[in-house]
Image (cartoon, rainbow, N blue to C red; front, side, top):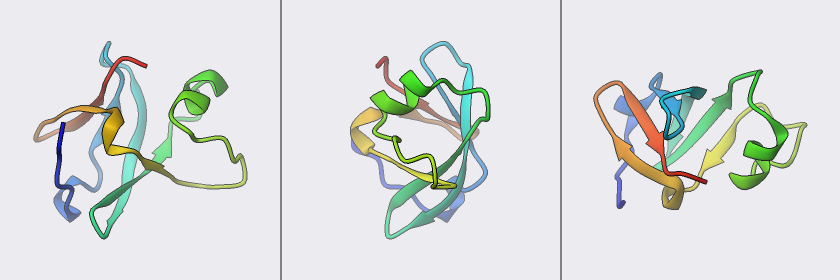
Length: 79
């Protein structure tokens, strides 16, 4: 998937392949998406997404993990 992210993506839900919410797009900066993770997201999912630092409030979503972008959400591929 080659997505171009814009400020229009801010506020969209980020969901996994099953449609379960893993976070919300907090902001987009220079085409990069930063996600505020759902408090219930497991450490193993964070690790697979490269979100290992617990002291951060938002995490960059690597475009290679994105399967689809719709009007309402960003769906990540199966990890």
